[in-house]
Length: 224
Ligand SMILES: [Mn+2]
Image (cartoon, rainbow, N blue to C red; front, side, top):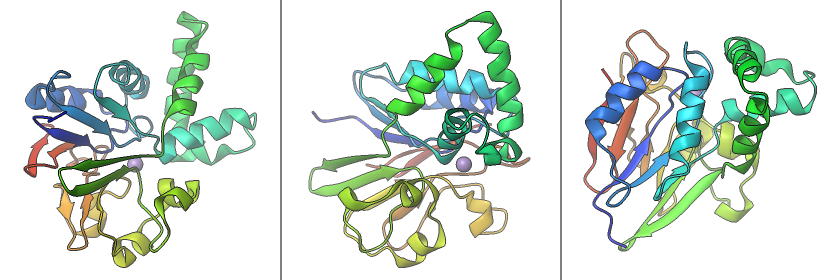
């Protein structure tokens, strides 16, 4: 199929009103566009569960892929380990956990639905558009390792080693590191010279935004 646009949305982190302002501008059409959500729906914002549930709803539409982020993985690990893997809590999980408990009170299958959703999230989405190869992934890839041999640690957590060391032929579109951590005061996607597009524009930061790119035209939309 020829898609009108191939869209990718970076880290959301519980910022629902920013998310809605972005979605309004993008005007996604599941009959014409393809959309990849790059993960990190929860933690650090004030509407974490609303953002998670929005991603759950979107993932059921045609032509939408919602990837796994390290924050979803941390949440899953916390519950699977009965709280032993508590690194999630100081990383924004405290707030999300409280919201999750409220949702669970109202809807007894809430936790189960959230776990199932996270468990089913793919680590990456690989596609060819004409002759161009694209890999969408939350964090990145370990350089010089085939896609099929990448491990969870790299796919969800890698940063500098990937940005500095990647030299593959595929275009990589990823989130994970706010662009303002790479370039002072930058809240716009960064296109690195080695075919990497960084889409985490610091949603949870005071001046941060949620961003969407059409990889075919490099058009960018941002939240208010
Ligand atoms: Mn993130």
